[in-house]
Length: 319
Image 1 (cartoon, rainbow, N blue to C red):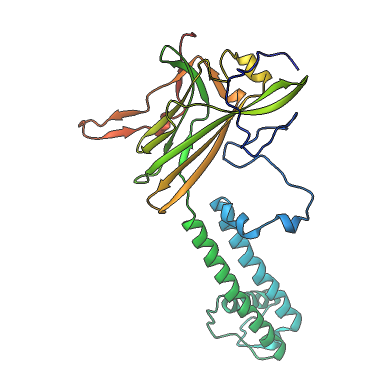
Image 2 (cartoon, helix red, strand yellow):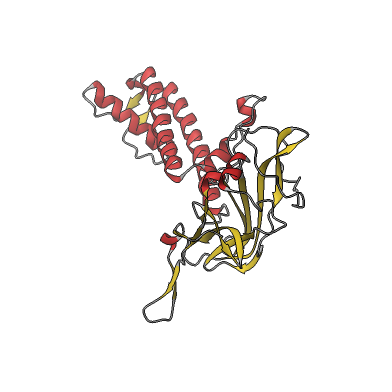
């Protein structure tokens, strides 16, 4: 590994991140969406897998697609069972072709599963009645589980925060600072009593080996009362900073990753919400500064937050 500048020995080491100290690591510690970049092994799949948690955390389109496919699939399953027993187990059938019989039995299955029961097609055989009773029970259970999942997704506290795609090293009070910014993107959805913690993971030389260590990054401000607009988080790169004197090549060699934890109270959910993200060395731009992302309305009565400018920055002269 190429040699890089020594990390400031006076920087505060944070041993409480939960990542420990390692001499190697694949990829980043935390993904941009806040999930941990860790895969667990050594236990059976079903011991590690939680269907409920997975369904709660799926994107909405995937969740809706799975529900739709489940409904289609389970009704096809019961349709095949009914057909295996024979259509003579039913009365009220108007079908004249085999394909029409399949459709009628399928729609009978959906009516039974959802407990709609229109009533034209009815089971008369013992086998069909038994299967229909099992299907009705499965329908009750399925809709109870689905209701819990839908409620859990809507009631789950969500931060609704969006972070800038990049962090910058910009001029700050006669020196330079490490900066990124974020904002709440929902209307009438303001977090209060916000706390933020920022840590840096760096490869350092220790006893002739390269190991990852974690450092608390002191912030210009680590708490605000509310977040109606954006917040530009600043870490002054001074004599106490672990980043002091590091160049772009240095942070690449040190495999720098800065990870962020934001915690605030959400009045809508009446609960605290958390959000994580991180910036790796290739997501940090030197000699850049963010452009303002707010303006006044034409009548001068309202401040307009331009979320589309969250990622906009411009070149500045190096210091």
